[in-house]
Length: 185
Length: 266
Image 1 (cartoon, chains in turn brown, blue):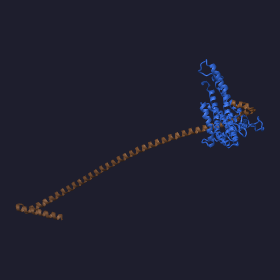
Image 2: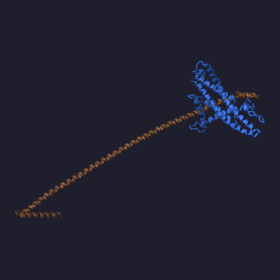
Image 3: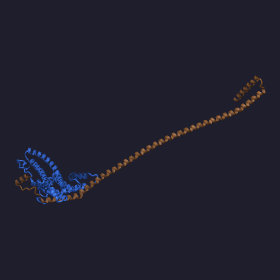
Image 4: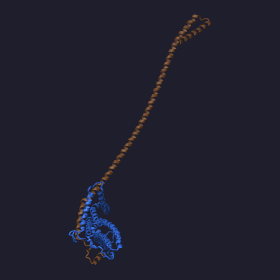
């Protein structure tokens, strides 16, 4: 720089010293900068800062909202899982109940069927017994009648002769057979 | 730099552009040197450009930004988070964001003028603007230091803790000179000198190309291509330096403010 000034001076030209300022230029720079500072302080910085603050708030709000949504979603998931577990337990319970009920019904039916069959057997036994009784009764009376008839025959034929009595018995039995055969017909 | 000027040729000698070329004739009144200069117009224009761009970008305040708003937020966030928050930190960095933001974009736009073809003139290639910017920052950090620490601030800023007493007579003057005298000077001249030098180089390359093209000799005419290649490379470098200087200026401001805020821990 010095060399520049010196060389300029030695050339003899009336060059201005570059370090001496022009007062008017200084004034213009000062005023210009003051105006710029005023505009920046008054408008530019507040507007940018407001935008930055709003943006930060929006982002933080968004994060909070997302967190809330996340929490809600996990709560809902938990609830669904709980419900699913409950439903499974319920289904199991119902199945168990149904199985138990089915077994119960089956047992009941078996018992009823057994009772019924026992009853029917009982009835059959009773009927057979009564028939037998009736048969015995009727047989007795018939045997009596037959015995009486036989006795009368025997008495009527005179029972002294063994041959005769044997013939009588044979005849009786033959009669009886024919009778029973006739009865069978 | 000037010593590198090409030797005189057959068809006239090459006169490199000098400092005077920095002082273009004023726009109003036409032709005078103390009137309304191109730099003044550019400075006013820069205020309009920055204010318009950022008000348009910030106005909609949408949560999901459009292209313009996104660009504005990127630029704002660069200064807010990349400089103010990183350097100053704490809770009160936001108080200094407007100053740092205005400084960065005011200097950036005024520097980038130098890389725009028709305009081709960085405003801070005149030292006045750089003095003003550095002066604003100088008083800002001193006032911040006094507000924060009271008048004890000057002691905190010049007497480093943990230094043996017998070294203090050497250290304290150095601290005073480096913090309160040299700092604003380097702060302003760094910006001014880089802009001036960059502008000079571009001008030199431009006039060099013009001179070489005018030569009769075909080889010399052809040599202008080499200068053009060099000029494009320098132009790229200058564009980088223009952005870098705006960043450096703002970064140093943040460092000075941080130093004033936490003078007791330095």
